[in-house]
Image (cartoon, rainbow, N blue to C red; front, side):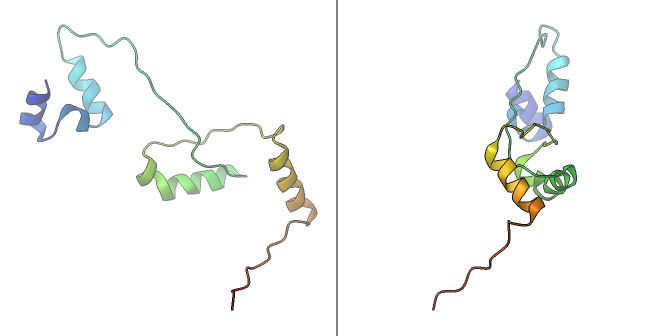
Length: 100
């Protein structure tokens, strides 16, 4: 199959995009696809959906398919402490002073 793909597409089967791979597999008479494995991992965390979507627009070329996933940070004490410090004004930016 890889040789046929190379003739038609000038690349190997695994180098085709996922949709093209599925299409080729569906055309095989003696082959039935019954399942697949897709892994997901958290790439970055944001306070707002808008910030997450902006990150996806900026970095999708580095990571491929990405989507916004929402998970509660209620039990993450560090996240809650940062959020509280932002809201009550105790978290402030202090610029780093260049060493002489």
